[in-house]
Image 1 (cartoon, protein in one colour):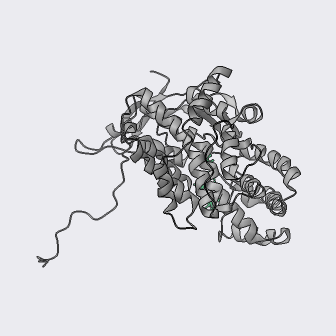
Image 2 (cartoon, rainbow, N blue to C red):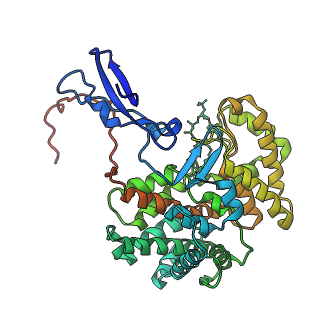
Image 3 (tube, rainbow, N blue to C red):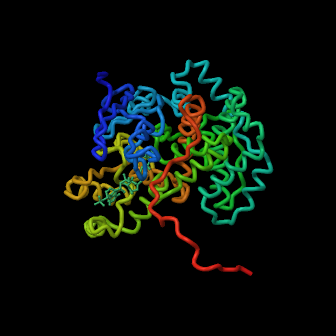
Length: 423
Ligand code: SDX
């Protein structure tokens, strides 16, 4: 018998089934069985057969992917095989974005062309600006981003021609170019400031910060570029699987990222630290967390059951930022939270460690970004991850429209009580 198989005995019938095991690059992480193979396990001819039941996909692979590898137990994160620590230290965001999308690092000429292609699409159609001016003065910038990215779909009808790789590439460059502009315009709208037009003479991150408020470059965006099958990437694939255009799929992914359990956590971390208020109140807050009254935002992760490698790097960068901006008092509260949590059995037994959102918010706040802009600052660099997951899905022969099953627990068929005539 082929060793790469699973033998399943259905004790209801005594029948044994042999199911092939699908292995990825690392059998230790990539072994799976095709869920459809379970449908043959029946108790009778008209039986539907078995499914897997897995709310939140805690143990279900929705696709095969070669983009990002995570080892949650050992705190490993690699983009196309390169460790995040080396990319964060030695590559710019656009170099890393090129790697994620193309699978290899760019030559200097390829990087220059990639930057040129993206920066020439940084400008927004003037009607997009009018659309953004219609938002309420205190509209949440994430709501503005999701809506405006979706609206790009109406400006570029050629985006629906998904089978044309040249047109797909054009949409990718448009999205990469316009996300920072939409984000900066959303910020300026909230501040009541005039929009600053993109300057394609500047670097990608330099242009973004120039449109915001002229700032030095920040490098940790590399860390946010992709993260395998997270909630928003899954959304990009699921919405994209219906063959919709990449703009509305990206808007759906950004909508998922907006949630406080996902990319919205960095905003919630700041609000939590402000609510705690001082180091001496941290112990009381931890008690509330353990009593399950509140969650420790910026802690915990579905995959990392060890320290998120990105949090380690961001924590190091925080020290560099505070040398320039001055020490942020919220950092002291965050460090005290981490010190207590990492020594407390509740967090150890639940394997709750700081994730990428725990320290990034403190840095954004030290750089004078408004708190409600934090998820937008996550969405900008994550755009390349969503786009690459979408492209990989489109090119995957195994992929089809996402349409999960369910386990029905409702009423059996029942007659309507009496004849009810509706007027
Ligand atoms: C991101 O998936 C990705 O890769 C996402 C991301 C990316 O780059 O795309 O890494 C970005 O989203 C990071 C996560 C940011 N979110 C937060 O910081 C919000 C706070 N954390 C959580 O709510 C939670 O940890 C999740 C959502 C991140 C993960 O949730 P899971 O895996 O579904 O775990 P769970 O909610 O089922 O919790 C398991 C247990 C529960 O306790 P018990 O009922 O078993 O006793 O752990 C507890 C939870 O109560 N728990 C927490 C906690 N997170 C989980 N308890 C207190 N504080 C927390 N933060």
